[in-house]
Image (cartoon, rainbow, N blue to C red):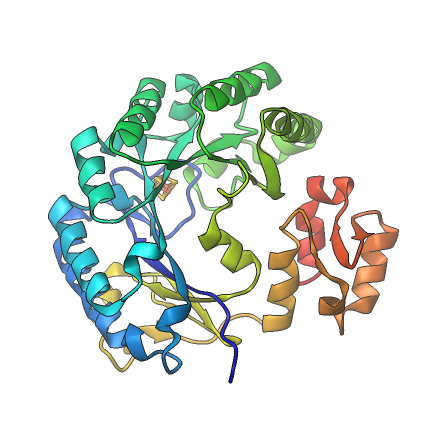
Length: 370
Ligand code: SF4
């Protein structure tokens, strides 16, 4: 009998109240009037996929569902009720899944979170980004620091046990002390999971345009590394295991959904811009909401395919702190040796992983496999 790997379901909600200055995700401001039609189309796509029969009975492999964005917490309670009742009708083991939602601290309250929790959503990832209001402004976030404390408190009293908080460091003009303060506040809230992302200022974003970016990077790269090194030491000393370049968790609270990506498992993506990967085949949906609304079951708004599966396994897997088995580098031995010589990769047991230097310069390593 063919052994199936874990299957995950990702549902993309591409709406935001306001576009953040650094954002290059598939998300749009000022399109909230399309939310109702979009949710109907998500339900339509869920049924199109015919979840119950994918890969002849693969539904039993489904372990996680993730509502990501954009800002999923812009959906109304009745939007979530419709989505979830449709998912439940197709997924017999719904109540045993890890079901996550990304939420913006500026868009939630206790009553709303309570309903989501009662519907079966059992993990919440709050996009806090910083406790410093000046830096939140630079990032173009709609919330302030007070709303972060309130959102965490509301999530806890709504019944969420599995709370994750996202942060960004290396924000323009952010000092090491300010970042230390963010981490101290974060652990005081006792989340089970903390993500810390080094701000990447991508071309085309408003932040890129307002900064003389190149000069800043040359000047502050050492500070970025210092912040990252401090993060690793600090979170480790507070009981968080560093399990992926940007992710830390109490034991047993690693994100199962994201682990499945990094382990190159199978996943289905629903919604505008969502990516899928099943048995080595990859495809993605159109990024335009308007085009997505025209989707038909024959795959009218789909584009195919993307990426090369073997190299994807390598650069996704190398994000994990434990690395990946050496035999996965078959066909890439030359690159592997070169990166080991450069002290970017190292052996540990039967695995190859990023060295400490490699963690700081991970993009150089990944570029080799793109
Ligand atoms: S909330 Fe997230 S997805 Fe929306 S604009 Fe900000 S960074 Fe982008």
